[in-house]
Image 1 (cartoon, rainbow, N blue to C red):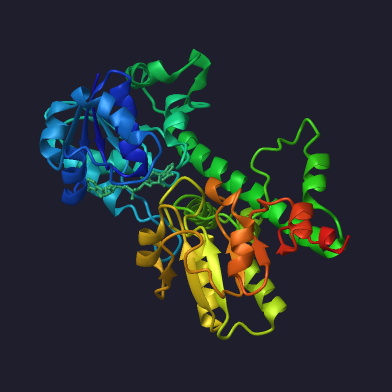
Image 2 (image 1 turned 180 degrees about the horizontal axis):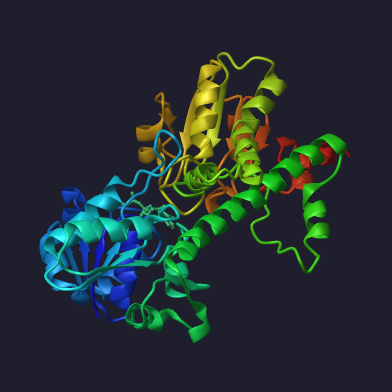
Amino acid sequence: MKIAVVGTGYVGLVAGVCFADAGHDVTCVDNNEEKIKQLLDNEVPIYEPGLRDVLLRSQSRLTFTTDIESAVKENDLIFSAVGTPEGPDGRPIMDFTETVAKSVCKHANRKKFLVLKSTVPIGTAKWLKDVCADNSDEEIEIISNPEFLREGVALSDFLKPDRVVIGCTTEEAKQMMYEVYEAFLSSKDQILYMDNASAEMCKYAANSFLATKISFINELALLADEVGADINEVRRGFTSDSRISPAFFQPGLGYGGSCFPKDVKALVKKGEEHDIPMRVIRAVEEANDYQKIILHKRLLNHFGDLKNRTIVVWGLSFKPSTDDVREAPSLKLIEKLQQAGAKVKAFDPVASKNALAAASQSFEVMPSAYDGMEGADALVIVTEWNEFKKPDFDKIKSKLKAPLIFDGRNIFDQNKMKAMGFEYFNMGRLALNES
Ligand SMILES: NC(=O)c1ccc[n+]([C@@H]2O[C@H](COP(=O)([O-])OP(=O)(O)OC[C@H]3O[C@@H](n4cnc5c(N)ncnc54)[C@H](O)[C@@H]3O)[C@@H](O)[C@H]2O)c1
């Protein structure tokens, strides 16, 4: 099939490259000339493991361009994967999506299918149907196809999806979308057809539920610290119930990234528009805001005052295996530490550049995990990159002023840390420090 994908970010580029890998002829469009130039030079502008390899092997079926006019004229199936970032009132900004829709209208030379791959508010397909009817003489059919990939494992998520959700109203659209995705499906049941609004809502339901799991376990971990329980044991106990999946139940420093925070907010806003106060997910958000600054509170408790303390932060991306720092807990923590007068030195395997660009105040980036640690007051683990999981503890001990680690991701064995002489704080297992 011939497909155009507009937007070559984390979603659009992965989708375009995977469609090409499945044998489709794909035109990837972006209005960022620098990105397209990089892609034409076989450079991948984002960090996503394995993406470049698939791009190279599918090269003969991939075109990269800034020319949306030709892309629309030459392709009947146009995916929109542009950003829908959070706006000032919590609603997603829809300008980029609207621009794409209007470009499709302007350049349509026959019937076109506009597929919404971005996460868009419930009701967007309905709204765009009217926009297109007002702006084009050709029929533009809107298909909703929310994306569920996770950064860091985006390729396997896209190539082997748990399910593909399609919101559409015609048999022609269903058939077309089946052909697009057929190569990725292990059974026909994996493709779920429904109306557009339900498909749009599926995405918000999934992300808000996952965010709920995170805030739930985080709050339990805070309580476990206070009451002398071990959150690992608690989790083992309560998720052994066949109704409760253990997946996505790890205490940490709160969710971040480009999706959960904005999607949770967008669902709250959609509820408000309809007089549904969305009490559960509002609380999820509140718990998450608190969790992002919990390590600042713990450091403050420990030292009494953070003025002139040097804190080493390991991990800046919002999760491992990505260079994405949007809404990353690291940025909030660093900001709070700096406001309290601490000096921050940080290391991340790939996200330092993005973090420096997004930070409210500059901080020192360490050239490696250990270089620059000399004389620091504490090591704080914010993102659980694999390379942090088996560090050189002797080196850490010899460099820090005192052997003190605050671990926001529970990556070390508490008993071993104690045996090695570390003072070790983690999430939901503080009681073990006392045993
Ligand atoms: N990142 C994720 O993990 C993820 C997962 C699932 C869904 N989503 C959703 O997918 C959408 C895209 O997210 P992303 O992370 O890929 O965003 P992104 O910011 O990485 O990429 C968006 C791209 O669209 C381009 N763009 C914007 N306006 C354009 C226009 N008029 N013409 C051509 N290109 C244009 C930008 O230059 C950019 O390259 C969002 O709605 C997001 O919520 C993201």
